[in-house]
Image (cartoon, rainbow, N blue to C red):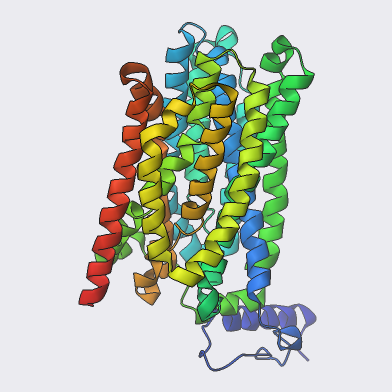
Length: 460
């Protein structure tokens, strides 16, 4: 008679082998080698279930992102750079802000190796705990007055930790969602992951606005600003378990396998798919440059050069982000009617036109600020809603999972990583029109990348 412990080990090993061995695409295994049901009720994950996991994951990541971004303007210059004037302190704060985008591709390189060796669930757990831990650690940082330059180095270290961890949060659900979308609704499903950005901004802006309105300035700078970082950590923990419940189930493991969404070597992917990666990173440049031009940069300009209370502008941001949600949703409908490339080309033209007059609206009082934000978020929602995966279908199937992650990292680095720093520096030294020139350059690069992608596709 087989001992009970040995029987359990045998059963677990057999189940593991079945789950990790890709099944033929025409088969849907329902029992493991010992006859135990593998997929209850022959359930196949629906696009709706995948979409829930995508939105939860993206919202938590963007909430972390915007909590840090708002603090980079309202808190860090005073807390960590009190020896500099407000402008210089903000520029240094934005320089540290950019470190996460530099570290993110490195994180992808490391976490893809963890994914191959230990699985998607292990990778996500380590990455999200590192992200949440780095975020929570920032909330405990001492000020420059208490710790001197050590506080600045620690801020930079934890910002690098955030970016490194973000490189490991790629779970492939966005690619899985796109691959499982009906032929005539690909634009609609492509926009779903992008909803996380405006959702995250709405919550972060509203939370900071509440803390500033309810607390005296001294209390806010002393301890009030730290609470949003604790909230970000809590949301990360909730998002981790929500995503793990989806990603590591037998149904999704099988679906990832049959769709060839498995990690491969980053270096081999770059060697094989470098043209697609470069085009994919440059194609959404207009959208990603606009991303920070209507979220982080205007907050810094209004805070530094107007007498407007930050609470008021944070609420304008939150309202504009609601408009952005509607625009992202609309992008799905429009893309399914006219095509994603045509929509992105039209948005790039709109962003190019917007760059010619938009920055001056920030100097036109409250109505000008509202117009800048609302128009900007309409353009951002339409373009950002379709910016992910515009060339992902060009990847060979075995490189789609890893290639999509690398492309996303590079797009954020090139398009958004240094945008707040560059826009503020250009505006201060050459006038607000110069920040419009920065935005225009992104639109032109998007035009070139979309044209090049079309040319390569026609040659194939």
